[in-house]
Image 1 (cartoon, rainbow, N blue to C red):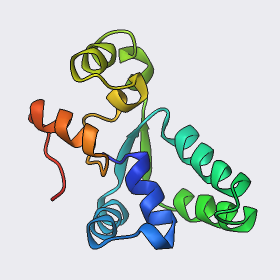
Image 2: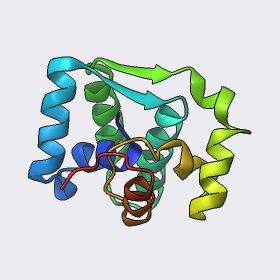
Image 3: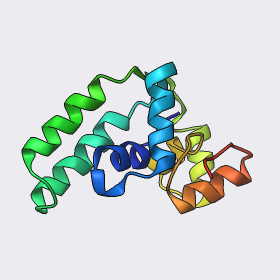
Amino acid sequence: MLDASITLAWALADEITLAVESVFADVKAAGGWAPGLWRLEVANVLEMNVRRGRHSAVVREASLADLSLFPIRLDAETDRHAWGETLRLARVHRLTSYDAAYLELATLDAGLRKAAVAENVPTLG
């Protein structure tokens, strides 16, 4: 599974790490899954970075074009679980419902990593 934090670390050269490169090598080779909100989150962060002057619209568009080449499938179940299991995970681990949707994903976010460990979900590093 792929989350927005790993995706954006890959897309933004100043945030890339060996672990992120490894995840994307795996995604390139075998494909990956992301929750249904993944494209919205990635697009939103890239756009906010353009507005804040962190990078240009050209970088945003190039990043999205590159990401579109990866075999990433979106989980159609994200929406279906939003008011059930996802909400439960958000409540139990004091996460936003957005973050709870990523709980089963490998993530760079410390709070999500803690929740993933509590749920026995494998994480990087």
